[in-house]
Image 1 (cartoon, rainbow, N blue to C red):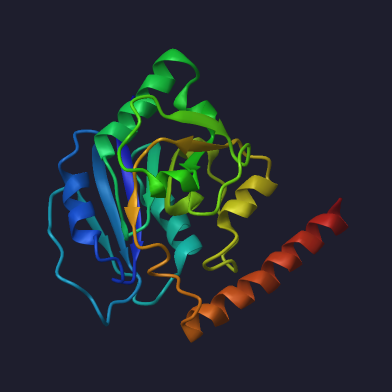
Image 2: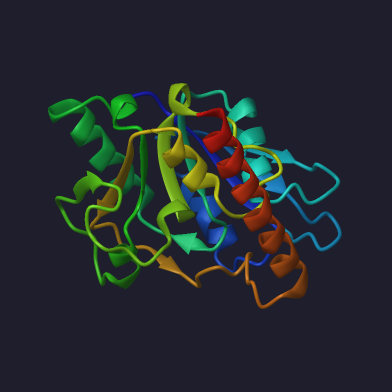
Length: 222
């Protein structure tokens, strides 16, 4: 399997970001790490590396437009999108993707592999993680905190959707979407998208309005 480009949008709320970056730098599976700085006023000191591509848009692009930008910039066809507030065993994760690619179905044909909520409660990694159709068993969120996919599967998310509904958009397009169960992930969930913060709530409230508009337009088109 080819190496991966990693995309991480940040507003510097993730306490685990520096450790996450170093772990990506140290993985032979990673070609580059695209860090998108969405808060150039409150920047942090980060570990540098020749794999780091540091992007400063000079404004907050928010989550979904940052994903779009990262995919456009990525050198590799294989992509990982990661929140800035998670830690996980990168090599174990990618080795599991390689095993599936080798023994069952090509990685690029799996579509989008996200995280089942059970992963955030695990004490250790499973040697044989399960891949299942997204939503096949009850999950309580966190699917898009860590995503892996091939660039050929990407369709840019409408730029009016800033924080929410990116994964809903992909699902609505009929994209193959999988849950991975068995990868231990440490996180303080939603540290960068806390809806108790007024500006975040304003953006996500508008996301709901824009999402309903998109759904209405789709129904009208049909």
